[in-house]
Length: 279
Image 1 (spheres, rainbow, N blue to C red):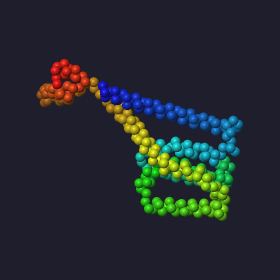
Image 2: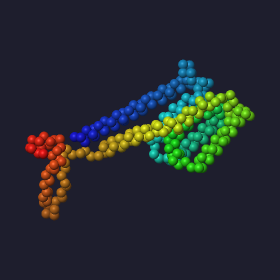
Image 3: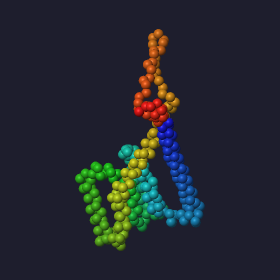
Image 4: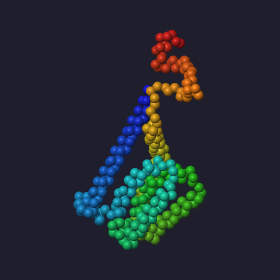
C-alpha cells in the first residue's frame, strides 16, 4: 500500500508539472500570436493606436525592447544543459552573429533606415548589450572560474587596456563615434553596475538553486517515464518459477520459512502479537 501511494503521489506530481508546462506553452503561443497581429496591424494596417511604424519601431527599438527578455527566457535551457554546445550549434551561433554583424554594417553604410542604427554610437551599443551579455554568460561563469589560466588573464588585461585607450581618446581627442563626450561618472555607474552585480552577486546566489530545481524536475520526469514503461506489479508475491523434469512431473517446492520476529512486529501483526502474549 505504501508503494502504491508513493507511486500515485509521484504520478500526480508529474501530472501537475506537465500541466503547468502545457499551460505555459499555451500562454506563450497566445502571446506570440497577439504580438504578430499587433505588429502586422501597426506596419501594414497603420493602426495608429499601436504606435508601431517605420519611424517609431525600428530594429534598434525592437532590440532595446526584446533583447534582455529573450536572454532571460533562454537562460533556464542553458543552465539545464550539462553538455557543451555541439559543433552544429556553434556553427549556427557563429552564422547568426555574422549575419547580424552584416546587418549592422549595412545599416550604417548603406544606410538602411528601417534598422535605426544611424545616430547610435558606441555608448548606446554598450548600454544595449552590457546587461544581456552578462546574463547570457551566466552558465559559463562556473566553467571559466574552474579552468581560468594565465593566458585568459592576459587576454582580459589586453582587452581592458584597449578599451581604456578608446575611452581616453573618446574624451580627449574627442572621437565622436564613441559617444563618450558628456557622460559623467554617474552615467558610467548606470552602465556597469548591473552587469557587474550579475557575476559577483546574482550568479553565486541563484545558480545552485536553479540547477537543483532543474535536476529535481528532470529526475521526476525520468522516474515517471520509467514507471509508465514498467510492467504492473502483481497483487500477491509470486512464487518461484519451476520447470518440469524429464519425466514431466513437477518437483516438490519446499515450504516457505516461518515468519520472523521482525515480520510479527509489522503494524498488521502487532495486535495479534500482543493478544497472543508475545513479548
